[in-house]
Amino acid sequence: MLRPRTRRPERAEQYESAAYRELQARLATAVRRLREERGWTQEEAAHRCGMTTRLFQRVEGADVNLTFTSLARLCEGFGVDVVQLLKSSA
Image (cartoon, rainbow, N blue to C red; front, side, top):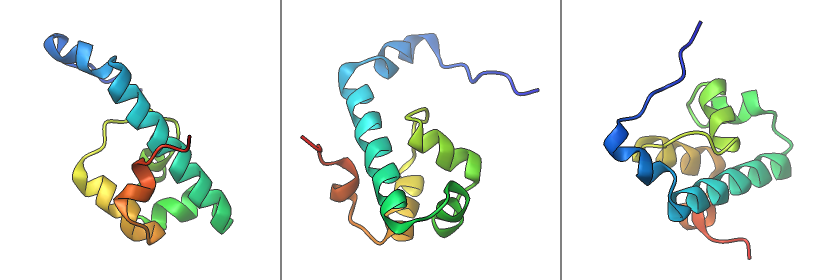
């Protein structure tokens, strides 16, 4: 059984900031939209992006702190620029 990931107490505040949550939400929305536009399942999208299905699901669920490597994988898998993943939909 997996334990919930614990974060360093001194960094907990960073993960609750409005800016952090907004970026997570933007990314999740963009990734879901791109996947659905292409008619891909989460499994197919994960494969095309070179990541596990579970990691991809966490991206779409706005439940992950991505590395630049994972962000680059998403860009390559979807064939888009990072700006398209992080721009506001408003």
